[in-house]
Figure 1: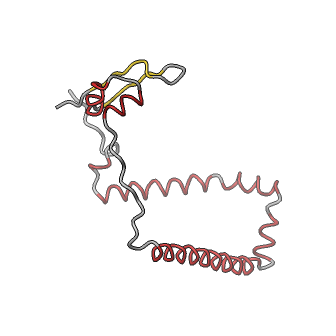
Figure 2: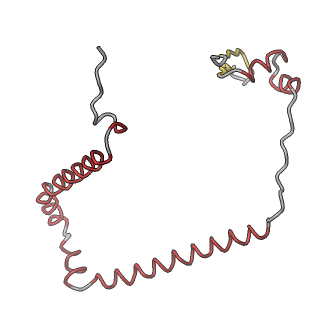
Length: 152
């Protein structure tokens, strides 16, 4: 008798309510897990002198400096985004209605066979195969070819 998969193992069988409920429960337990680590984190922070952060950011009002710096960061990102957008628009205008791409030349089976030093009669079956295994020697020459056809 085939074992039925649990609904938790196949998310596609879960309703939207079950998925969100499971995600919320997982988040709650991760928060609890981190909360249980707070005493150890506090001890390590105290040993490393992290009270410096509290003094600078809370007691000396360093948060205002951080907000000011974030404003400069935002401005920098906006300027860089504007430059990128301007460059994209410039290139769009410059190359509009100009197709510089060239069509690929068709390689004939005889040319392909000559390039790889194999029998020309093998080319078409290899091109139609689903999988091809090619074994090379140390100099890169083809030593053996095996192909598998698609099942029809």
